[in-house]
Image 1 (cartoon, helix red, strand yellow):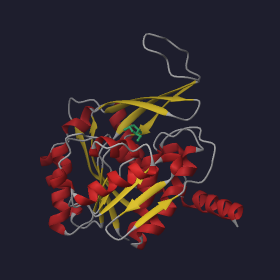
Image 2: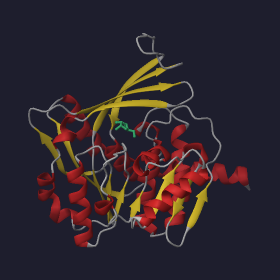
Image 3: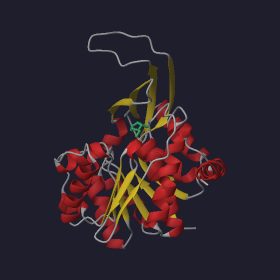
Length: 311
Ligand code: RIB
């Protein structure tokens, strides 16, 4: 089976639920709380693994209880953990997340060990990376490491998918234009390009700007507005299915994990996008991040349910 390498972040998510966000200086009672494994890289790896993909995680974890639990979590999901590096005297990454009744979330991250994932740490994984069929990246680790991974992918002819999240204003287009897939959400697209993305036309114009920089496939996730794939020869808008969202945390990661799993299996971009869109939709109907990701069986049942409704 073709292998996916996720090179990225691992966090522990500390999540509070509230009817509304507190104002500055206000204290509010939260309606619920949990601690669970997260981090954009880890979430994408777990989503792909839950769908049956063969996944290797290259990440830095803390030498604390959160780091230990994170490693156990990867193992539990049959993820290749040979390149999960414990950084001594360093705390694991932590994300403080607040989710309001609409399902909307706000996230504050403390990088911890992720911030110490320097390019030299990639070296020990190079041989195993060279055997992978897709490299998946985000921006919760140092930019220099992301650039090194993109250059590695180019050198070895391995397609690279970059999810530019959280957005970085100083992203070098020269370095990221070697990616096969650039997958921001509309906010990240606005920050990356400096262009407005409130309307679909705005999203199209900003995506075109990125294609002008040499990016091959720009795929923008837009929540309830669906997703848009633009390349030199394609413009495909995939509508989102209507569901009641209870927690949108990690929906973008669900999309990317499912896209990666489907793309390495089929090589079909449009089919993978349609699956990813539905997988992310299912995730927002459930609370939690990784806990909201369906396995292959649950996902098939959901697809049948949706197709029954539209038939
Ligand atoms: O994309 C959602 C993720 O962002 C959360 O799991 C949190 O850890 C932050 O990294």
